[in-house]
Image (tube, rainbow, N blue to C red; front, side, top):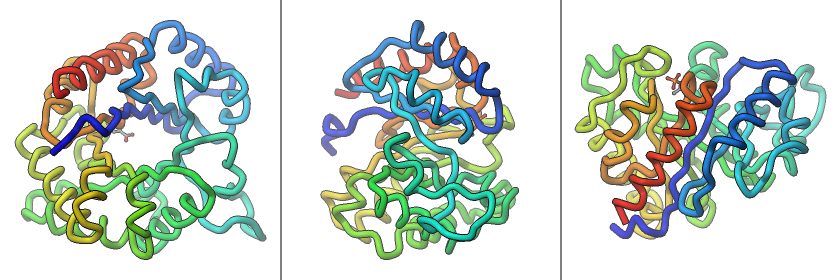
Length: 261
Ligand code: PEP
């Protein structure tokens, strides 16, 4: 597989943390500490309220912005919601199907597939999050779960669109738990995801799709995930709020990318 064509991607999910002032301060510190590399794209996903001010503050050559969530309809009587149409011009990426959206807010496969479609309709790049629960892992259902989430999430998506897709493999049990995946299990999961893309869209798409790992990533363990074949980067939650930690993860991703060639 020619990995050289895929840029590494390090995505920071700040979740429901930081008010506008705190988010601005973190961005300021990150912009001083995180070194830009042409082979490694860094995406920051702050809460929705802070997107507008951060979009004015950010150096777009250094960081791209992403939204953590949105509603899939473009406009209308949907009180409290923000659409992908409204995010146009503010962000390049959108997270879709994060396990906290699935499990805390009851999002189903149908919502997730509508969101993927809405992202493409509005010129945004979706990062589709997939992963098994602890129970599903114990029952050896990981591959089955990944298959279903990928197939369902990408319904009605064309092979051209899929080339712009990022899939984040995030085992639910690893998110925020301090317990990360074993590299051998990560390799199997990533292989399974690419196989699925290959079956649905063919070889070219399966080589172009980026696959990330997320779940209790920190600066100490990140290299073991980045070294796994087929892994193009990381989705980072807790550690992305710590300037030195996150800067170190980005640097290690760049080094790993150089080593992979
Ligand atoms: C996440 O928010 O997607 C995540 C992986 O969180 P954490 O790194 O804190 O486990």
